[in-house]
Structure formats: C-alpha cells, structure tokens
Image (cartoon, rainbow, N blue to C red):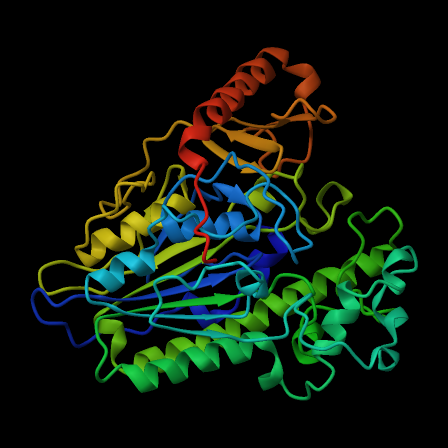
Length: 465
C-alpha cells in the first residue's frame, strides 16, 4: 500500500453513517464484501486491522485465499490454455475447495457476485462458484472485448518513449484503449458501473432475499491508471503536456520527475474515483436501512510501488510493505446486547485466509475443514509472531523487526533483501549484507514454510471446468 494511496483517500468509505434501528434478536446478518485491486483504505466506523498482509500474490492467488480461507503459497505452475499469465498459483479454484459463497448458500443466504476482474472469467476459470447470480462487467485491462478498429488508437499518446515494445503489441494498452473508446462521462468508467450494478442488485433483492451475501470486486485502481480527468487534476498541480502514462515503465530510471508526478497523480485520481463510487454505493446501503443488520468488509489484494527505490508497479521480488500490506476493515453494526466494532484498531499479523472464517463466524456458520485461516471475531490482537507472503518463486518473511525477501526456488537466480523495520519502516534500505545471521534465520523460516506447505496447497481440477 503506497503512501500516495493513503493520501488519496477521501470520505466515500471513511465515514459510515450513524446507526439508529436495530435488528431483532438472533436475526442473521447480511454480508457485503467490497474488494478492490491495488489499493488501501481506513474506515472510521469499522474495526481496522493495522497489520494485514496478503498471503499470496498477485490477483488470482490472492482471491483463491480470500474465497476459500485456505493457504495458497507455495503453488505449482499450471499453464492453462488461452491465458497469457503463466505464474505459480494463477489458476481456478480446486475441486476440493469450499468457497465462502458455497458455505453461505448452504446456510440459506442469497449469494451474488458483481465483478469487472476479467481474469476471473477467462476460459476455464470458476470463481463464480456458489453464487446464485453473478454479473461480469466487461472491458478491463486486457479483456478481449473489442478487436478493432486499431487504427483509431494513437498509442504514442499513452506510452513513455522507452516503451517501444508495446507500440505494436496486440494486447496491452491497445486492447484497453479499444475497450474504452466510447466512454464519455464518469458513469462509463468501470468502477462506476460495478458499484451502480451493486446498488441495482440491492434494490431488486433487499425486500425478499435476506440474509444475503453480496460480493463486489472492483479491478480499479489496478493498472491502467486512467481516471476521469477531474480526479487526475486534483493531484496534478504542475503543467504537463506529455503522453498519458496509464501503464508507465517498471522503473523511473528513464523518467523525469514531472513524469513520475504525473503517474502518481493518475493513480491517486483513480483511487479517489473508486472511493467516490464506493461512497455512492454505501449511501444506497444506508438509504435501504441495511446499516443496522449488515456486516461490510473492505479489503484489497495488494498495493503497488509508487516510486520507492525508483520502482513503479508491483513485482515478484518487490514484496515490501508497499506491495504486500493491505487494508482490511470490517464494519459490524451495534446489536441490542453489544456495541458495534467502530473505532477498534486491531494490532498483530492477519492475512487474507482469515477473512472467510471470520465472516462465517459472524454468520453463525461453521467453517469448512479445509480452512486454515483464523476467525478475527474476538478482535484480539493476533498471536502470530511472523507473516509470510508468497509470489511465485519468491517469499517474504515479516516479523515486528525485520522483512526478509528471498527466492525459495533454487532453479533461478538468487535474490535476497532484508529491511530493518525499526529503523527503516518504509523499507527503502536493503541491509542484508550487514546482518547475515538474521538473513540465515529468516531464509530457513521461508524454506520450512514452503516445504511444509505443499500438502496443504495442492488440489485437483474437475474435468467439467
């Protein structure tokens, strides 16, 4: 979670409305899950988990952990037809998995998924399992919604001069720009569509389909960082006439300071636009009287680098807090016999696998045996002494004092970094060479975690998918 994303947040999510009416004793709680990609948020009326991290990255591995409450890292690499992403853990749910939606549906909940994450709907993917209804909103990133006219796209207007390879690529920014070429107003942006559709679902279901579980996924503010112009202008104060760098290079080494400012403004503007879209949705939740009997979760899958160490974007070796730390807030309404969760700041390491058992616990539903996460319902500080996050062939071992990043798969080039969190909380200074004993200890901890994980993280695929 980058510093700029913290500054960009406005009031759309941060201030849930005051509560008045109360649900009856024993009435089941509705659940609304708001997930975003590459973002962070704080909420004044919620419990805030200050030390939440991803268990596995990036997009699909993180959601496998979120949807199943089961450990994902380490993962095998399954190369799937018609999917250009070929990394460990980037695959559909296993046949053995039991998802949050399946568990709640079995308990009598009406379940719905609204998402614009096209990776979830690529051929062979099955992340809509357990949902009674689902809506896939088209057009994000490389979603093959349109194939032409390519001649209408002036690609040089969106690329840095150093990005020569992308000028003729059939996918990448050209695909996205084809998909968005008819957008005219803010309502055409995909985040606006996602949360407008979520409001429509509530209007159609709140009267006769409670309790419900509404799972909302917004791919924004993932790249491409392309907000409506008014939101970009909130942050871009310097004159800029260059290309609109909606997916800039991985590093800033060939970029000017003005170009970096421009990129940060694009990202901050998109964060703020998504925040505003969520705010409109939450006002609808309030208008429908749902704040009195609904648990609302906000979580992201990961963050991104925004110029720290000269880096932009996330990457497999960039397992520092800017990428691995995630916002996790849970709004729980006050009940007749107990207060709500407003104002709780919960310290200690938690991760994505903890969310499913927490929500099932709040719903009074027993967690499936395959769940490895822990319920956070008690709001006690976590007792974990470390947090391990994995991405592909690399992993991060985080303790209160250190963050070690290393390559666990010896078939590739070695990689090790170490950050002293006491002296360097922003994780900018790699001190691995100065602390060989710490590196050795945390390297062994990562290896043991990987070696012990294979029996947990393997599974099979149903032949019908």
